[in-house]
Image 1 (cartoon, one colour):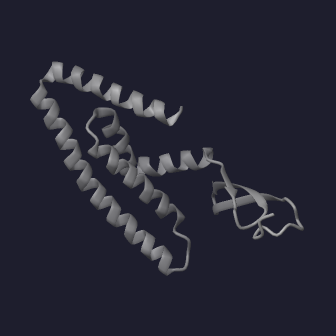
Image 2 (cartoon, rainbow, N blue to C red; image 1 turned 45 degrees about the vertical axis):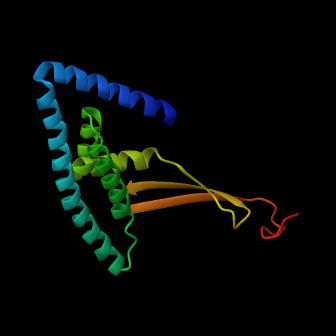
Image 3 (tube, helix red, strand yellow; image 1 turned 135 degrees about the horizontal axis):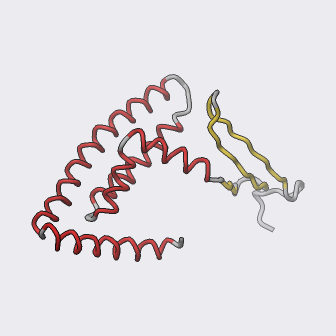
Length: 157
């Protein structure tokens, strides 16, 4: 789905749901629920963010790559931003990003479906990298193709 379509559809869905819920439970109750989810989300974000930061620092101090912690940090930031956005759909997605069990599931789902294409401006090669989880840990596989082996990438012709 194109990004601009997402920026149009999500607000329309949120406005529709806010109006529908407001007509059922009242405007004051609807506003109260939206504010309450923002407060709870901020508290959860602070709690989960500190735990993730501590795990990040521990792994970095051990000399290990804290890739999982970086992915969780991005999910936490995304979830926090969604919880501060008024609306029910964004709140649900935001809470899913903040709860550790669902956050890790979302990250695994995204990693399985994500294929990174790395184009380096410093070398004349294209690289494709696939990241996947295995029982023994994270496996990174890659292929590359050298283009113009004799060409100096630093010189403009």
